[in-house]
Length: 238
Image (tube, rainbow, N blue to C red):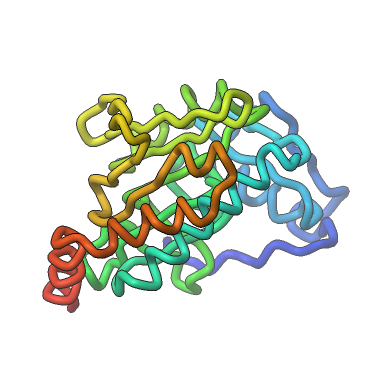
């Protein structure tokens, strides 16, 4: 990115067009630059994404989405706190490519100075390129998350993709680097490939059990694989 983009304002500004503010509607087709220019004019509470060149406007967020999101966010925060060189993001816009500007529920990236594959815009406001791991909580957005978003994430280089499907309290785990969906182990724990030591207990999320979620995460953080990953990140710092 060669320029610093303006920050999104809570007031729709007409200065970008010299006229009334434009709107985003589900099904609109546009480039990422066009989408971002219009998105900057929308109110702060408004959420939309560009997936494969198509606009998707989000529905209001219910508790069915918010509670598992909270649990997963907790796990991302705890993991990143114990893994120097890794950054977690919550509901942050990502510039994937010219056709995609998603705002995933959660993402985890290796910082570029530690060998990560993504960067940021010059002012640091937006991630450019694919984070290594993306997590979505799917309720009304299930069909988009499992198909159009998955295709975009795979195409752009996201290595691992986790989708919590809130309507039936289940989890889908995709190894996008190998283009396969991985089955859960018998204990229901996802043991991340991209981030060794990141263990997510799907049964704990289903049961809204923060203590069990924490126990699984702590077990993963105590593994030799996590220690080796932390050392590898430290050795790769430039």
